[in-house]
Length: 230
Image (cartoon, rainbow, N blue to C red; front, side):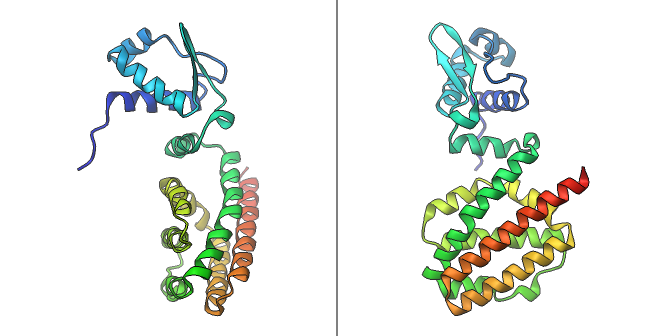
């Protein structure tokens, strides 16, 4: 059964969106609790609950007797801040996407190496039926997401999967956009086959290098595509 969203949750999400859209710029202050309570048609304790969570997650700095100050969430935030950013992906900039792709270059090859080292046969099984992969964006996006989650889980470090799960909705939408171009699909198909070859050999170190090279080429293609669009 889906949990009913609380009023404080709605307020929290609305304020995060307002911060991300610069309605409340970094360094500015929120309106007083009384004013926010009137705006959202709730009691002040409900507003205070939302503000306390935003402070805990690095969005705000609260001062006794004064309105909360909007923080630079890039320097004050945490993993929960990242989840908020991804939830409001309509506000995400091109620079942010590049940051994520750069993170992927650092993260993905490591859990692929560990997956091959710890569960070689299962990695092979994940890649054994590439001929069934349909040559269209949605199919590639779905396959790539499932593959990444499976490899992260097979690495035996549960934190990899927790991090990856935070990207679910955003990852799929971005992947469909990326895989709409045939050149991108071809690159990934080659990567899957190269990774399968290394998994069959049980060569975890080379699997890591194959993944890193593919991720770097993917980032270059994404940047080139955006320049062409501009």
